[in-house]
Image (cartoon, rainbow, N blue to C red; front, side, top):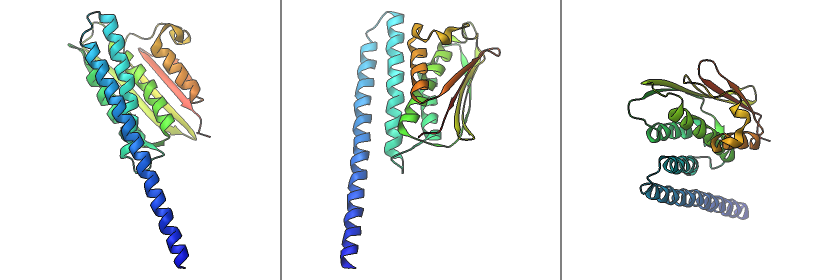
Length: 217
């Protein structure tokens, strides 16, 4: 009996140390990404060309998406999963702030189910969302004072369904099939394939992307 108690204590200590090591790794990665983001921001302050500046800002948005994943994991009680609600709330808030445009008021509608996502799955969904929403905020509402962007994440049966839509000018016909012409769409396409998902694009007075992902193996 004493041997069993000692074995259980040793196992508990080993698990606690393993959890500490994992949390420390998440924390270190987050800090490294914060340094990268800060360096990009400092470098961007010296850029005069609008096109180059936009590319730096896009890179900062992608780094921030990854940073939020590790921050959410570090705070999570379950180190193997990410709360979709906590992650997407932080991501959407940062996107709205980063892509704010003078004279344009964008209303965001979100319906994010509180799901447990794997780290790789959450990162893929976050990068897809980052590209589509930042693109909408920058390009969907030329000459307008108001716009609407909506995002949804839910389970339908065993599938995970993500939708991102806006009521803007609409994506050019067939552009989603020419992902190589846009780094953002290339990232969206690559992450969709990586997660084993499918993408459908509709243009109902704007643009609506819908993604369906099968259960994780």
